[in-house]
Picture 1 (cartoon, rainbow, N blue to C red):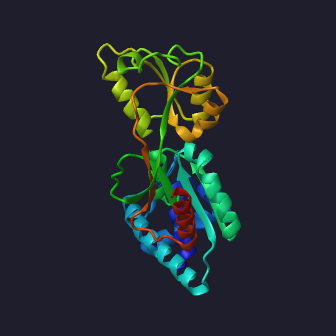
Picture 2: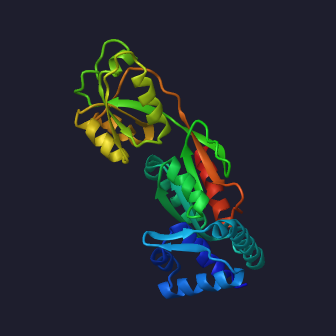
Picture 3: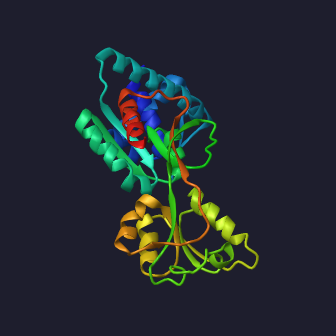
Length: 292
């Protein structure tokens, strides 16, 4: 069997769109259709339902997908063993805070030591990263999670990320003479990161657990947006220290003298059943070196 057909099949399964699959594979949409029809004739069954909203895997298609991924994975291993290639492209998903603060130095180091390795970063939360690993869109991912229990994703801790509760210098809590309590915080405005951010979700639970709590909580998908609102004096935010340390040094933000927050573990995640290519291993080693 031509493995190009399986590559087309897994790409269409992941994108759910003939147009998107064709664009990703750099082929005509009609070629994608021909490949899928050839596979359906080969296996004697329909693999996708063609719907107005896109291509949806049938039950037969779902059964084939796992086996097709195994075959493509084995082919990739054989190619790597045969030509001795250690380079290639690595697609990494990570929270925006890590993409903007921690990962640039890893990418810069790899460009010097391993110019044959191309790193592509995608900013995504935990749910997006796990979905990306499952679909094959991501090779590796970084999660900011105290615990990560996913049956098809394995993780390992590689570091910890300190958090900072911050406000603008002119905010009433900036110069509080005593330590700010949860009761005080529960009456404030907060700018939190989107649902699924573990430390933001935990802060929301703790605020709402205060009797008579009246916090006003606004969620953002961007660290920059949350930080800008806090700099404008509109409220507080709990953010990774690396995303606010420059603002703290410049005096544009101050840390609130309040409850202490434990550092958040940084976990390297990969699909449990997929092979880690040499290029992905090179990124992993560089990441560990810069996490020590």
